[in-house]
Each structure stands twice: as structure tokens, then as C-alpha cells.
Image 1 (cartoon, rainbow, N blue to C red):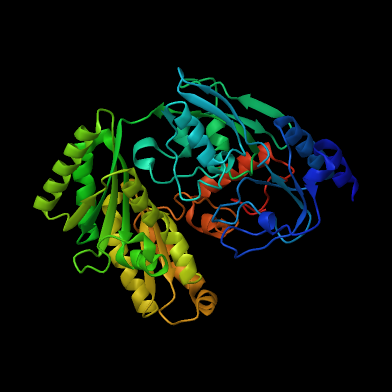
Image 2 (image 1 turned 180 degrees about the vertical axis):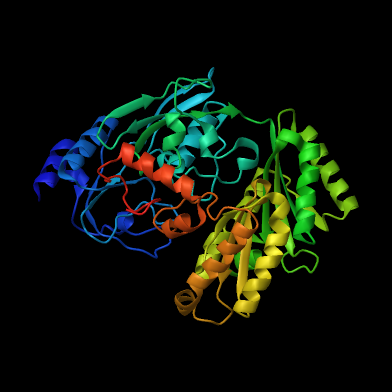
Length: 472
């Protein structure tokens, strides 16, 4: 044990400074593509211990990598390969501190698993709407650190819009308590928004006060086949007009993406799989404040209008919650099915919704010309303009060799197309270490200068998650 590790053991307890054994859960990224090496994994129990650990690391000049559920997709929460960085794992800090039903807020510690937070809100008769595939293992601190999106951004916004206040430990080990839960607070710079989305590079989020909403009286889910992406966009316009704020989810899925689910998870029974008039499918969710009858009538009227307009070729409405959950499980199983098919090139992109059909047609054609037979796994949150535009090796090819030979060129092609259409190369997964070079290439030089100035001002030692977001 080094003097720093001895100090950390005294602060959090020897059992919570882990240096031996299998550290894969903390050192390997979610996609198992990168493995780092930590000096130690430190597991504080409360904010005071986090502050003390940061103070000790700052005094020693030792870098800290904050980590929640380690479910990120941009390699932003694991240590580098140097063996000199501390992984600060916040999963012991998992309490829901309070629920204020009158203020419609919940305050939870950063290590609280998202599903548990949702359940606590539900038990209080309320709704916390942030929802994503990893909600059984991701933590709210990581969700805020990456400004997570998910399936209900269309109605409720990203994690940023769902947060009213933060508790943060600074790179000097000071604690900022901003957990007041106010909806209006114009007392200077908005520090909350500075830390949200900063991926642990400016400080460590230790707790958050979050917006809650009344539980809807009814939730209905439909699955619709559409003949083209243009019709999916038209269906979205109809749904906005007829369902208004009740439209909480609008997901699009290409037929090949769904075919992987059908191939790898046949028990899920994908609707309209393989049908010629269903090259794309849309998953819609309508949350109604009145009653299930009112919601169903609105949904049926919407689908009839969509049929009449030629937007939809077939559709099914879930008859109960179990059926609705099964439809959502199909959508959320696409990444897992794709992983079972083999390593692939992932893209998390944002575009103006009106541009998405043209972007997909343009980029699909470029990729097919560059790599004949390449397979495109295209799905995502059409309602907020976020696509997961992923590229799989040709059938029968070696996926690892495909990545080695083609990944840089594919990324360059896709991101150049995104820039041409005025989009963003990172919609909800963040920058991490995986996309640092992309940020330098595609972000405004003025914006980069401002970001570096903020980093230098708050973390002059450069010990907070170095090499993430900005080059160290």
C-alpha cells in the first residue's frame, strides 16, 4: 500500500479500497472493447467521504475517474492503462433521501439505480420519466453526468430538464449544496447545467433533486408499420397534432435491426417481421391524463388518419400493460441482439427531424458503395431526432477484421454526413475518451476555447477524469 492508499483506507474503510482480485467490473467498458488498469477502486459511503477522498487525491496529484453503473458507451468511466488513476465508485451512495410530493421533487444520491428511483417515485403515486434500456444498472449520477436521453425525451426532455438541483464535490474537495429544488432561481451562473453533461471532468455529482410528475391515468402503446422514413416523419406530425402532450414516445426501427431481434430472441415475436410493406416500424406511446377509454379513442383516431394518409400500412395496439411491455422489450433488445451478431460500429447522432429521411438515404448509399454488403442497424428516438445509426459487417464476414479495416473510414464518412446535414455526432452517449478527436474536429473552435477555459478554471490540476471530453 502506498501512503495515498493508506490514507484512503482510513477515510472509507480498508474493505472499500480495492486493489486486488478481478477488477474487470470497474476497469472494462460496457461494450467490452477497452480495458484499463486502476491504482485502486475506492467506494465512499457518503458525500463527506467523497470530499475527503478528493482532497487526498488532489494533495497527491492523483487522477480520479468517477463511476456509477459503468454502462456508458463512450469509454468515459473507466481508468486509462497507466495504473495510476483512482476509480471512485459511487454505488454505495444509493439512497433516496426524500420525496416532496407537494413540490413534485425527489432527492437521491448519485449511486441510486435508475429503476429503483423510478420505483420510489411510483410508490409515492408519482412518475420519474427518465427511461432507457440500461435502467436496471445505470445510476442517476451517471445519467446526469452524461445528460442521458432515453425514450421519453419527446415529452419530458433529457436528464438536464429533469434535474432541479445538484450536490457536487469540486476538484478541490469542497462540497456545493445546490439541492433546493427550485424551479426559478436566477442568482448568477447556472452551475447545475455546467456540471450536467460534463462527464465527471469538472466535479463529482453526489446527489440530485429531480422533477416528478403525476402518474398518467392511462398508458397505451402501438406498433405501426410504415412504408418509408418520410411516412414515419409524417406519422409523427399527425401524432403531435392529435395527441399533443400525451405523445410520450416515438421510436423508429429499421427492418434489419428488428430481424436481428427475431433471429437472436425469437420468443419476443416481432410484429410484421419480414413483411414487404414494413421496411420501417414505429413504436408510439400515448399517456393520457383522463382515462384509458379516452386514450384508446385518441389512438384509434390517430391510426385511422394515418392509414387514410398512407403513413401506416399496418398497426397493432397493445391490449394491456404486459403486451405494451413486450413491445418495448423488442425495441430495447436491438442493441443486445446486434452485440450477439458481432462487434459493430456505433453512431449516436442527432439531426433535425425533417432531415432524417434524406440523411439516411444519402449515407446508406455512400456506405453501400464504399463497403458492398454492409448491413445497417438503424433505430432510435425519431421523436427527438436521435438515431442510433450502426454499421454491421457484411453477412458471413469476420466482425473483428471488419472493425480493424473499416471503422475509421466508416466514422469519417458518417460524421461528415452528419455535419453536412447540420447535425451532432453525439446525441445522448457523450464524448468520453472515444470521441475526443471527433469533438476537436467538429466542434466550433470558439466553443472548444470556452470549454478548455472552464476546465482550467475549475480543475487546474487536471485530476478530474482526464482525457475525457477534452484531450488531457
